[in-house]
Image 1 (spheres, rainbow, N blue to C red):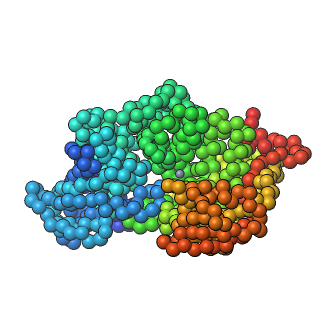
Image 2: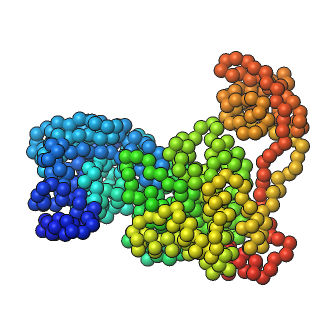
Length: 617
Ligand SMILES: [Zn+2]
């Protein structure tokens, strides 16, 4: 990727007459072409890991021309405010301190000009920037270092200059003196220990780094070497785990049918509470518990996480909405399609486990019905569409409050259901000739490989309709873009199934308040929109003292059980230090419980499509 000076000069002339490539534009911006290629090397050290600090030395060489430093008299150095895949402004710069700059051994003045930007007053070619990063938050999207290990989320560790984002970058890791392992998806530089190269800043941001004495094992899937780096004291059967990773990875690879990586790295943190992951181009970080492999259900749950994050290497990292790359690291990047990027990845996590044989067809049907039950039991499903949910991930999905269940729907859970419906629509519309896999394959080939860009909402819809062989107004206009009810059975009928609500029709009264029982008290943590608690005026934060003058401890629900629909109870609450008695008339239980059942009679065509849907040979 590096270009020599002569080539750059030719590029300058060439770009005068042609549309400019971004590389040529950013590298040759002063009046004269630069004599040499600019370079950026980050040296990352952690000499006192117990203090939770990383030290970063950012070595800039030959950058004056590329950054317009001589002309402007300064360069601006920035830290991203968020990391791709986790749609929240995290303000990584809040952890930065001791920012200093030197050139040729002399201090260079600098000042902070924005929350995440430093202006360095210099026209020098070669500079050394030093800063420290406080790292004491161990999640898949933050930085951490302690006496046991270090974990780097590059967006929160490495700064950049706008004009130097497209050049190859180097990272030299200097592990703490007793640590011997560095695990990352970055390319190692041969012959230089713990030295890695990224073709550009985007790739660097997309490559987390685990540093310590982690155990590793390897396996080959789809002909590609995979490494698993395990942090945390945990018992596991390496042979079984490697074999099951391979099963999941190879089943995931059958969706698109082409694997774009030359190697892949899993970084697995076994820590409490443990749960979740973050996807990257050729790696992922998974967070799980120390007993992830202790029971069959935990094991399957972990494999579901593996399938989810691994499938992201296609869906979102390469098959992506146009807003999700190249990224603006300083602002929110808005898209209506996280229901596709995240939700349909959730759809595929179970679908992949089904095709790999981890789930029986019956178990898969239960998962699908449960997913529908979950979203239909959330009042927010009738308020917010998944397109809105995607758009507002930054301020709603990632910033939930006590009212979120009433006003929002997760683009993960409803998106997963929509993945099932779109798959069924394509299967039915093409008489089993095509499935959601064909849509994924088309998007990968057309937009990632051929056009080398993301797709618009309209392009995605067009591709989906092409695969289904029909207009999908019911799907896009209603299911994606409104909060209106979905006619599920129209999608299940072609596979000979129907969705049935099996919730028992009881006359037991329903309160509609969630409680957190603790310290002998029942404190209300949520109030369901439209419920008795909601219309009657119970509030989140209320401590329930008594019901009908009977003292309530941490057992509120026991006091409600046996009460009938229409019965009025007197609830005494402590609200911010004041006692209030509130009459509440209990309502009908609105909760649904869905099951997928076969239609009473099925045609051979329905049976054939059913088998195709559930990978029954
Ligand atoms: Zn995801």
